[in-house]
Amino acid sequence: MTSVLAVGSMALDSVETPFGKRDDVLGGSAAYFATAASFLTETRLVAVVGADYPEEALNFLRDRGVKVEGVTRAAGPTFRWRGRYGFDLNDAKTLETQLNVFANFEPVLPKSYLDSEILFLGNIHPQLQSRVLKQATHARLIAADTMNLWISTERAALLNTLKGVHLLFVNDGEARQLSGEHHIVKAARAIQSMGPHTVVIKRGEYGAMLFQGDHVFAAPAFPLPALFDPTGAGDSFAGGFLGRLARADAKSRLDARTLRQAVALGGVMASFTCEAFSFDRLRTLTRQELAHRYGELQRLTVFEDLPSELLTDSAQKASA
Amino acid sequence: MTSVLAVGSMALDSVETPFGKRDDVLGGSAAYFATAASFLTETRLVAVVGADYPEEALNFLRDRGVKVEGVTRAAGPTFRWRGRYGFDLNDAKTLETQLNVFANFEPVLPKSYLDSEILFLGNIHPQLQSRVLKQATHARLIAADTMNLWISTERAALLNTLKGVHLLFVNDGEARQLSGEHHIVKAARAIQSMGPHTVVIKRGEYGAMLFQGDHVFAAPAFPLPALFDPTGAGDSFAGGFLGRLARADAKSRLDARTLRQAVALGGVMASFTCEAFSFDRLRTLTRQELAHRYGELQRLTVFEDLPSELLTDSAQKASA
Image (cartoon, rainbow over all chains, first blue to last red; front, side):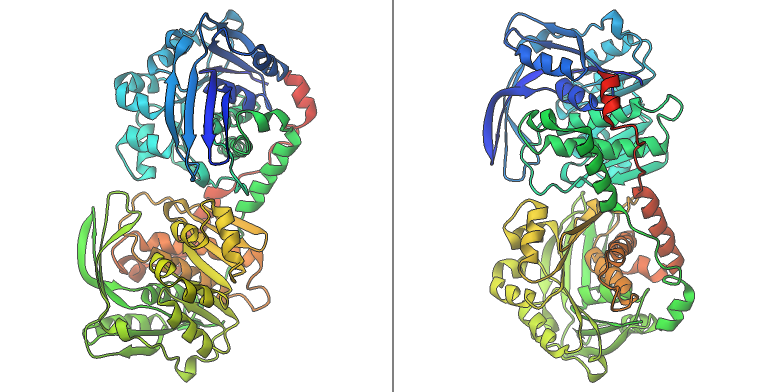
């Protein structure tokens, strides 16, 4: 199977939801991505942590088969994010961001990573994303995430990065902000014209849509009986998604069949992340549970052909 | 096939969207419902119109096989609604409501309607809904719609009506307001405890969910390349939905298979309504077009089983 190279943040998060509060728990886009992808394939991580980042957390990733040779430990404290979710658990309100060692993050790919065919550019400054792109000379599939901050403040750099990106993950709001189109189909089409042939729009509790050329796919979110903490859901989605693609051979990796499975599996992965704070649910999650919920999502969405006589003209006459 | 008895409003709407403006065009919950349902079965309408309601509109309904014996023409002007949609076309802002003849609406079912097995209580005062319920002695499936106004101002009457309702159509916001639960699964469960065994939650551009006992189904909305005017989408959904149920025999009417087809067909019907102002698109719509888009929605949502080796433990070892 193909391994996935991921660049992004590793953080210590402090999160408040209506259901509780946690301080300095594991977070960061790259860490969520790698943990999710590790259920499917080997992930090679490039990130920076501070002197205070727990060795236990790195061991957790190692135990999951994640390669951490590209994770640098720098002097100073780890990147910290503090946020609060309201009753609806949709959008986090960022209360505080301390970049710390992340402010001077200069991603360098170790030689052992250079044969990676699949690259995930987590949500970092678009210029850093571009610099990673240049180093990843063997990458055949480049996927990226971004955020509202870069769309508004670093638009030119972001558009430059997007020219080299095949697959972009964005949420509804980001898609609208980036494209200037409110209507989501038009927004996706506009983003496709910026470079990525494939756009995945994450819609939180409503699910996800995929646009690839003229091909469109939509999957609802798995209806959890209760949400707990959505932090990391988007990166878990991307990890499950690219993990699935990594398990396909290069020829069928971007087939509709594979992409649709990837969207569904990404959504299932994200749903587990939302069930508890930080990585708490992912730590106990099994492949059997993933496979089971994937099947549940299939059964939740399937509907059959209408009876053939239902919409024929003879029926029209009979009812008139 | 079984006919559907529908009670609700017939109106003249004045609508503004970012794409244009129409004055005094056909509208009203019962009219949208009946037009949509008429693609599938006979609908018997109970409503009131004013002296100024165009005869052409009644002929349009008659030509579609809709029974209008229960439509009373009263002295005075027809119910009028004026609304505006912003850029996102999600929620209408009501600019003006003139109840006119609708203020004294007292629905009386003609004798020829009394054998109706399926009843749709459109969005009218819950006390009127209850009075209709008492007259419809042969109704075996009672479906209802409601709105934020009644949930906030006529809660007791609405809860009383709901005790006799089997199937409730609500949108996200109404479900949350009625139940006091933000989380949509919990909201549906709470509404089920109020009477309806089946709850259909309409989520606009995101699609719809159905809850029946422990059975859950989710369908995305059909991704139109462009929305035009969403007025009447909810009632068109209900018309397509109950039209499908009317075409099933009483035994299989509430089977998961039939209900899922009904959600999908309702969504397809609503998507056509959104393509033009008022009934403009429904006037030209054909059953072939409905069947075609239903198939498109199926193809848009289907995803296959994961390869069996993808989430087995041996794969875990191979990646570690």
